[in-house]
Length: 279
Length: 248
Image (tube, rainbow over all chains, first blue to last red; front, side):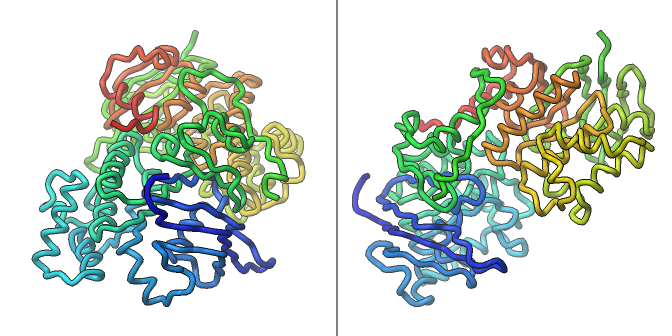
């Protein structure tokens, strides 16, 4: 781990009330994060997104979040007021969501959305805000920032929309970025462009990044460290470079079951889920 | 060998947008053929044009030696069935599995429904216990199995597969791909499969066509692709992208 600890998560639990009783989506997740890239991998229902949302403070109101410790830069996230939480959210902690089609405001131009984020958290003049928004669009490698500034989300492609989303999240200079499936809705080639931009900006600005994804291979090629989740629990934490030597059968199964070019296996190995993994 | 599907100069136009710009391809009988491309490349439109779900502007489609006209008759749908991408959208939410599987049988006036439904469910690895459940009581993988059972129940010779596993988790994807390979072997089916994932296509198909902007970029065998013996830059880019992120 590099540098000081940015985020500490100890025994995080997220519980949802349902008609059939309480359901724990996250069941005692612990990890810490420095200024590094951490991947959280798991399949649908593993609790990876709820973990990210709990850190961000976006858990639905009916659900309950508890933890022995959930601290960001020394601030106890669970005991501060909603007002203090809001001042962190979008400012020092930012989040990129999966699909720009749904996460951007459809009736607001891209430029106005970026400026809104900026002016919510910082006292800057309209002119300066515009300057910084344009510079940010430039930083995410949008070729003609002035044109894109005035476009509505439906007028841009998925890749462009996701860049705009990244620009909006980075404009306040956050220390922690949570990216929940940031490239899953994009085509493979665009995916790599967006990842490259994200990688560069995270490295330049020395941010901590939590990269949530179902794609173990993508995460391992992008992150320094990987947390593998299954049924709301962390089953393995491993350095991305050592993923080949993963110990847990679930991690190994997940790596193995994907078809790979040049490695013919018929039939594909399938996961033999053991009840004790979820225990 | 006869071609199961032969397509010549197929054009599909939505209003003024040309979604397919003169695409030709030939799928041999018993072959598994893949279509790869990014969103908007026209790969799904091609499948839809074969089934009569997209407005064909010009070009010909021949299935098992028979040229297709403007409309498709019942006999066509006994030969050609399709499995769609999203198992959450392609099953009727208020029908039981049993009812879903009876629909094609009723349309085609097939008598031995009882036996066929049992066999179809058995074949896709869902026991009789699933017969009277609703789609919302099933997982994504189980739903896709039902969709496959529905396609197989008419005993078609050709299966059109439109991203059959992209909505599924990786481990479930492996199970569904294995199932598809198994039914193809058992029933000697012809597959025409669409995917954006090169690894899946090389795993499932013998030959493939790379598409971009409604046009064919190139046609390859799986082994050419595995050996990186491709001639177009676009295909090379796709190959590179499929290897994951590489830090510069």
